[in-house]
Length: 185
Image 1 (cartoon, rainbow, N blue to C red):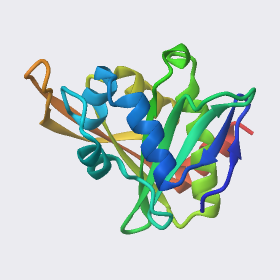
Image 2 (cartoon, helix red, strand yellow):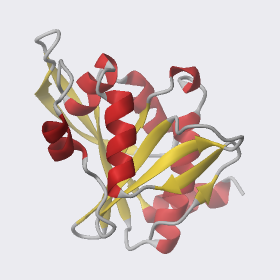
Image 3 (cartoon, rainbow, N blue to C red):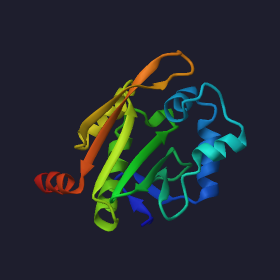
């Protein structure tokens, strides 16, 4: 299922377990905003806890891509996909290079990954969760055609602010994605 993908501005390069660990830990572990939203931790993790939390890649059910600008350089983030039961999958992304925040990176790379997953994969549904306070992610899901299908009220704890916050659940069906793509063709 993993192969190199390209968008207008980026190359999505498949990652192995070691490289995914290296990129994630070296770029995210000291970024409090990413740690709070992705890991739900107020402080950096030691290497073993990081390995336990963040090893996404196994080549069978968990896949990760490095997001690399077409003009070269270091990865600006990672996008992962985990296959679930019943022909479903979940997505997760973290852009650690702040120069790319607000530049439609997530929508652009997700289109390529969703196209690839629905066309070549064994999935018919994407189901993703996002912290309700992560407004940029909520807008990205809506822009891509995901439907809000539920809310887990006060489901997570912010270790910095000590507040409980909601988690939103979004879903996209293969048939809806295909209709949307045909309408824009």
